[in-house]
Length: 146
Image (cartoon, rainbow, N blue to C red; front, top):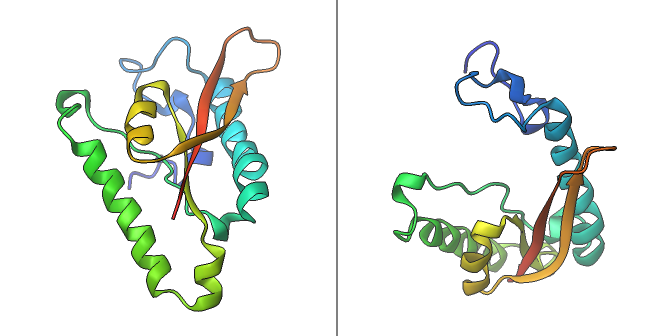
């Protein structure tokens, strides 16, 4: 890892991107608002429903390169994670097995169809917006009972 590389999503700042790939609408305030909205959404939507993080393994980020999209790679990765969580639950001790209720994720508009086809259901929305800004981002909060 490079010395100036962030060690977590919370430390990532869009200004660290090369100027040749930085989007004009992406800045530190938008990045901070997005991370805060993800954390708030996870607490308010998923933790309240499934009893804390132990009750819902979370698919953090799934990105497939545009060059190879629509070739089944996203579906294959999702099925791997779903099967991994189900196996983990099956092999867990009884008290842990009872805690694991769902696999959760936040979906972009582009991923919504894939997740729906795999059995995920929308249970809410995550809303990210910089205070005083007209632009915002909404993502579907989705879960799959396991």
